[in-house]
Length: 76
Image (cartoon, rainbow, N blue to C red; front, top):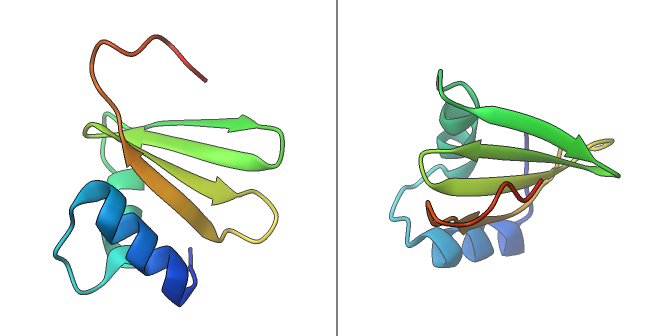
């Protein structure tokens, strides 16, 4: 995994994170036992601990991340 400087800021803002290493934080979420990883088109979607992380399937760039609510449907 990797991301851009703008990606780091976008992820921090969207998830209200105050961690120094956003990429390591995302990696930890992807390794959690309850994590669900799916692929749709050109992206991987990692759902874990109330958030969804979007990763480009060919470059493994973390594009964005969002909080997800429990009442949202199956989605992806």
